[in-house]
Length: 261
Image 1 (cartoon, rainbow, N blue to C red):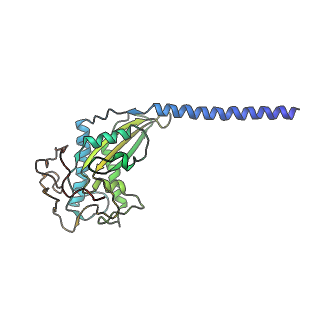
Image 2 (cartoon, rainbow, N blue to C red):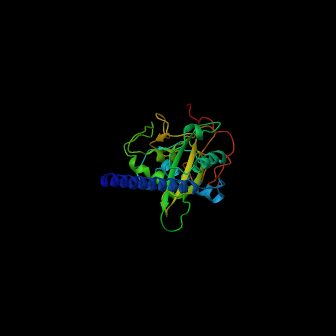
Image 3 (spheres, rainbow, N blue to C red):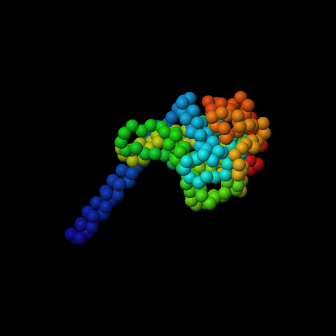
């Protein structure tokens, strides 16, 4: 009789313990979900400048072979100056607002005229005041160049070590970019910042060249583009938009730059 009573008490205790655990997890998940702070999606002018200038600086380094980290890759003759796209930015912000650290689907981020690629980055803070840091995110993607040694710029191949964030940053014909940001809590007492950038046209296409490589420095730009930027002398740009302060470009995609996929 005592044994049966003891067994009942043990079963009740086990049930209460598991119920407490599941309830705690439920509450944590509920709080985590409700803690997602969605950004307005209105990127400030300074943020756009930082995103564009950081990308163009790194792309120009590859084009001129002046990079200070990673292997020296072939000169790039068709690397295009990058510009900010509001429509791409809206999609990137919509995805960031989900507060999950994973890539969106190709269909989700597709633009009416072209497909887009995507880079994501997160950083968590326990103490101190967390702030957006686009330069840190972009340079973290670019730092994968250290693992690019032995790979070819003539034909993109996925594989390990992973360098897809780096190759998307320097993909010659990915010259339109839009970004989104959100902050949320993954653990009690911490804040996670999520940075999302999407690129058009899409990069990292298996079998396609990352850019047109050369043994000598010089430009071979597509269409009517030319290397007329006095700051980023290795980047191709359209007439009237070659200044390093040119942030946005409104118009049709440059002829011959969209992949046939």
